[in-house]
Length: 89
Image (tube, rainbow, N blue to C red; front, side, top):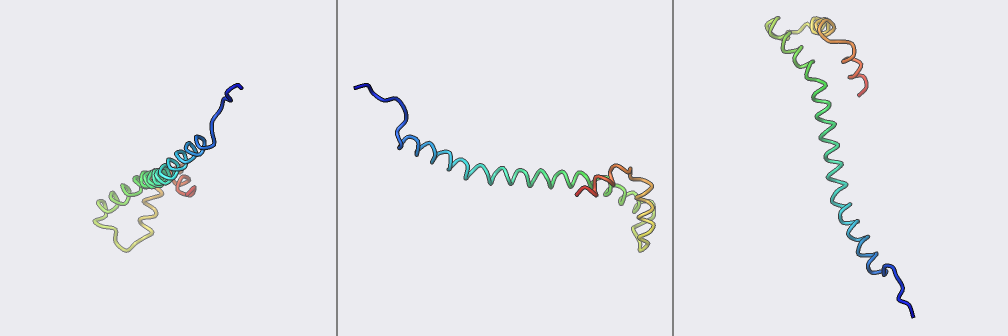
């Protein structure tokens, strides 16, 4: 009788178990990585706005109560493509 070639059911179940354990560890870690990357991207998008607010505060001695002044300052200093990027979120 010839010896059959292949894997036994036990060997296949061990491999499937190892893959399941690695997936249980890897998938949450990858999701956490994606969450941190999205947060970093969002923070980098707002850096020019933070700079604009700081410049406005330095030029006018504070932010004050006139919100229209700040809006006009944004329109003057910010490029249109960055505003479009913010609407994407």
